[in-house]
Length: 522
Image 1 (cartoon, rainbow, N blue to C red):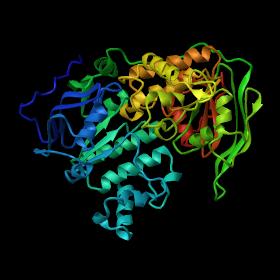
Image 2 (image 1 turned 180 degrees about the vertical axis):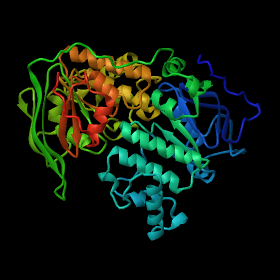
Image 3 (image 1 turned 90 degrees about the vertical axis):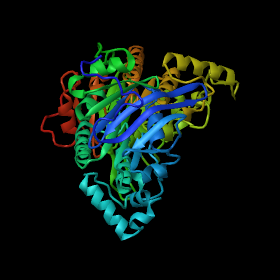
Image 4 (image 1 turned 135 degrees about the horizontal axis):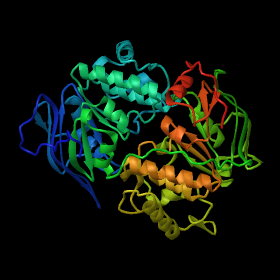
């Protein structure tokens, strides 16, 4: 245990300092699952308090309890020194608690301003006053949000900023952020942390849930570790290392995506030529994108959120109509074909947004195993879904990828975000693809699951899998890729050799500020 680690206070102990939130003996059970068991946490005013733990440790459930989404089965909640009972988010908001969920809760067919105001019309009206307040908050905290933009046109990073804006608009004094940096590049993370420090300087308390331990150590004032639904320690980040936190979380050291010998062959599996995707206004989302990926090669794509990565993936998968250029997989021209045909040609797909494109949340896990594989074994036999075989294979994925769930008949909604991600990765790797399109494959997973996913990609690469890897984790890109391309404003602007490039150089090229010329690939 780290030198400065201390056990959480027990129920009945005197509070230390000026507390914004005090949780004592919190317990929550679901059928077959103990999500929280005797959780004890003190959150001081004017601090950033991080909560870390492996997938399924109970972090998100605990925060939903504090936000009034779910009632606790046992324990007490104090906000500002007063014991409260929260039966809805509206009651939590009235107590000054706001939450930004890992998966956003926005209406795509409304503008940013309409989303922010929705449900809070009494604060500043719905007209000029509301818009002025939204602009003021956005400018004050550097969120850079256009009130008139349609949410459906925004990337994941911009959607997150809208969610943060919603919380601030409602006057929250306790802000819960669930994996807020998962979609951000290093420069954006630095900006977010600057904003969080401004919030705490004004006396707000920030609860920060993350799997990125280095980030937690750099921004948090206190860190609470949760394991298997129980608080095991609260530590001082100044006397703790990422390795020590990882050991507290999962009992093992922090993994690193170490490089392996090249397995790149001469055979081209993906050949993209002149891929262009315009908007209705004529501005290209993708502008003459050309690249190749060979058998046994991982091509990493680095870029600030919103520069065309999502559109590139969706165009390759046939989800973006109107694109021009050619897409060839294994020598077959797939331009103009359906997403199903592309999947059947041997493309595996790990989507950026697992809720929108990867899962049916109310369907059981075995049905989610079938998604995208409806025409192949073991999911289908003689044209019909084979429930027994699909269920058995789902159980295999659960065991292989350590998906924390009572079984394959549990709905996907019941899983934590990280366990949902492990299920998707297991499903796509089980389809024996020749080409894997992996958009943020380790987003929201703990350090142990991250290492397991990296190992699966390495093994498949050695066996000839070609991988297009999109990731906001630059260490992941550098550690797994054979080549790295940088995308900026819809164009590929430079190729880098991951054996020599640094995260700082990549970050500079991603923002268009770099002076370094693109390096030749190895």
